[in-house]
Image: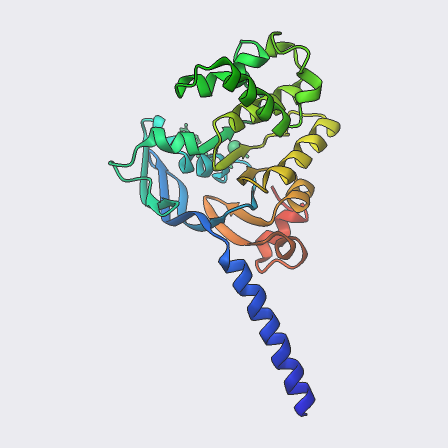
Length: 275
Ligand SMILES: Nc1ncnc2c1ncn2[C@@H]1O[C@H](COP(=O)(O)OP(=O)(O)OP(=O)(O)O)[C@@H](O)[C@H]1O
Ligand SMILES: [Mg+2]
């Protein structure tokens, strides 16, 4: 009897230690009772989520459930749409970003975004990357050269483009363009990278490259990725949030969500019964 109790105690102690390690990670974003309306359409309903540093957080859910709206709220891009109304709180690194006094320009230099369709500028490969740093006042050619190389290496595309930096970015394949856009994002040295279905327009090989890249980037960045690809979410994310009709049905460790979800609706979605 005593042995069993001891064993139990040991297990509990171990668990607590692990839990402490998890909770010791810094929270990058925290949303509290976040609601968003497009006119009368209630698109986000009481979202309470924490996004942790150096993790990949996947956002999954059927079309129209609010995934893009949610990530566009995190960099305040969504408010460019005139009918949008937001309530609740979003904290980024402890600051309430929805407050009027918060400088949205500062947020945009800390939070980069990669879209579903690669959207390089109609400029050279070099200028695509140097554009952001130039806007931030960097003029020195040597420094810009360094940033361009570092960013392209960071996005695992340097070897493919190093001999054609002056060529137009439109000459790259779709998969290369998407990695170029990730490199463009890295050039501004962000803290967080938001990705909205970044591989949905790519072939399987390019998809794999971008997935490997995301795994690598989480050492230095916190990544939030919207995906319709369940295998992708399971492969590359640490945590997964399942959205449905503007609500977060379940948010947990990815392994838990895919192996043993708490909610029947999560199970139905990940097993392909709807969505
Ligand atoms: N600009 C807009 N104006 C009005 N309603 C919008 C706008 N953008 C999105 N919505 C509505 O908000 C809801 C959520 O849309 P959102 O684009 O966030 O979904 P999603 O989960 O990203 O879908 P998908 O998987 O198809 O990309 C939908 O009902 C959509 O019609
Ligand atoms: Mg979307």
